[in-house]
Image (cartoon, rainbow, N blue to C red; front, side, top):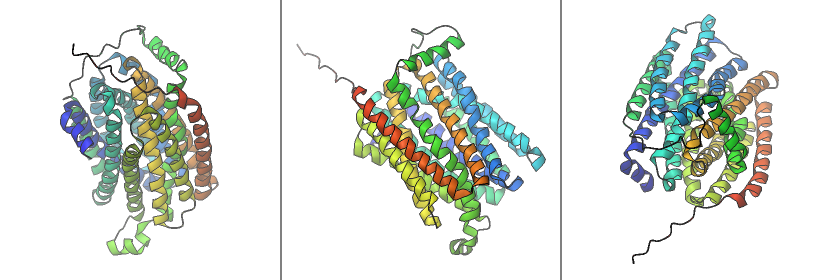
Length: 430
């Protein structure tokens, strides 16, 4: 871990960006568990849970093109700060949702919150490439993944405790405060001067079209930008199904452990445990993969292929799970794969894409990701109501097989076009 700690100690800008992520991501998991509790309390069908995830994903898809243009035109750290402050105010609106008749307000506020997240995420990913050197990109992305997963594990545990002990309202207030703290840390970042105006048109619409034109002429970058979309077509539905697995199949309150610990809300406790294991997989998986494969671009491309194999294998384990430990094992394998796919594809894009296009390329990646994730979550909720949990999980597993095989075929064609950066020429001392 010395390399990761050195990055935090030596790079003040990245350290502030990282602290902001730590704080806000902790609140995100408070929010998700509190939201899941409200949904299950107010309604009991699978489609209603899908609507929760659709309200989170669709705004990201619809507003990402605008977000990419803004991230390439205006101050990226100011976009991050404004997004955080507005999200802090929006989250407080959840306190007014008290009955099933107000569920529409819950979905509207969730949509607004994730419209603002659509502005935040591409700008944040582009900022990362501005404040670390290229040799540190894989390190920074792996540390980001470890942070996300650690906050997933810690936030899922603490969020479950807070929601169970103090109610969903307390969780939403704490989430609001984390956005404000994140904005404060981001405000301490000093952005380097970067000229992104070269070769860019002067209107927002042409900016948007120019980004697509760039991608259409760069098939390697286009393929890598669609990697997360391919993965989310599979893992998006699992996010919906694991809530029902936790609530109905493996709740802890009916188990010996649950009785020993006197757990009253076994479904929330199991869901927190699932998220904790997901945090371990998404955090440690990319770090071990990086240690094994290294930072060379072709090895990163290979790592994406290995990640897809893990993702597919883990979902098949989930479909066949007969006990909670089995299900948790499948979750670990699945998230090692999804974490590797996420980190390695992000790092490779940051290496390959010029700064003046980064905002739009990452916005395109994010839009494609959220579109396929929305499709997957809706399918999961519908399939759960029509076919049941296990058949729907199995279908997602075989879909994962198709995605994995398709990527491996593509990988074999793309690999020869991935060039390593030229070594610097030594300067003569004469």
